[in-house]
Length: 357
Image (cartoon, rainbow, N blue to C red; front, side, top):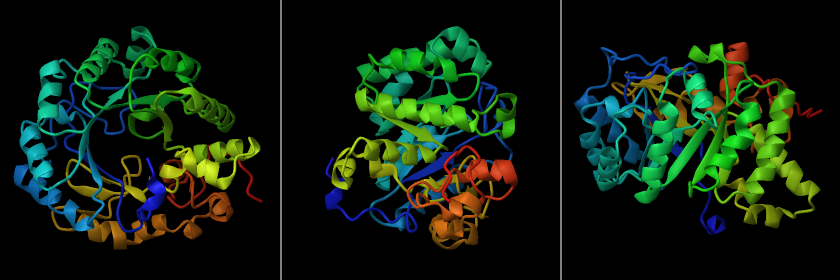
C-alpha cells in the first residue's frame, strides 16, 4: 500500500472515521458497555429523515471521504438499517458495521449487508473460551455467536476487525485469544485499553506497567501476525512501537515502509468523530463531550471549528506530560482516558509511563 505518494490526510480538516451510534437499543447488557445500552430506543433517537440529513452532511468533508462506522447499541436493532445503508452508499460513503452478537446476527443478515455494499464487519471477542468471553460480556452464548459470525464472514469474504478488551480481567488471556484468531484471515485485531466510564467501571483497567508490557507484546506479535494488530484508546502504543523499531536499528524510511505510521496522529477528535443516537456530535464514543447536535449543527463545521475539536487538533494545547512530550503529534495520549481520570480532555493520559523530561 504505497501511501507515501498521496498527500497525507489533514486530520484537522477531515476525519478518517465517523462513528454513528445508530441506537442505544441492544438485546445484550455487556458489563463494560460504553453506551449503557438498554432494550429500547431512546425517545429522541434520530428518525429516518433526520438520519438521512445527517448522512448528507458527510460528503461536505470533501475527498477523501471519511468512512462511516455504524455502531450502537446494536445497529441491527434499527428497522431502517438497510435503507440508511443504501442512502449512505448513494452518497459514496464507505461503511463498516459493528453488530451485537445476538440471535439477530444471522448468516442471511451478513449476506444482505454485503449485498447492500457494507465493506467491513467489527466483532467483539474478549475471551479465548465461551466461559471467559461470556463472563466478561455478562451474556451466555455470545462467544459461540461471535465465532460463528467470524466463520460466516470468512466464507462471504467480508473483511473483519476483531475488537478485544484489554483490562486486568482479560490480560492473561490475550495470547490465547491471538492463538484462536490465527487461523482466520481477519483484517485487523484491535486491543481496546479499558477506560473506566459507564458500565466499564465494573472492570479494572490495566496499570501503566501492565499496559507497557502488553504494548511490547502487541509490537512483537504484530511482526508475525498475518493481520494488522493495533490498539484503541492507547495511542502510546505508537511510541512503544517507534522506540522498538529504532532500537532494532531501523531507519526512518524503513519504519515508514512497515506501514506502522499510517495511524500515527489519529486520536479522539482528530481523525475520529462520534455522533450519538440522539444526534450529539462528540470527539469520540469514550469522550462524550457534545459540541453540537446534527439536528441544528453541521458536522464539518463542528469538526473543523468548534473550540473543543480545535484544541484536540493541536497537541501544543495538551497539558502536563502530554503537552511537553516529543511524541505528542504522533501519539497525543488517550484524550478519553485523560478526561475520565481528571475531567479535563487536555490533561495527560495516565496509562503512559514515558517521562518526557
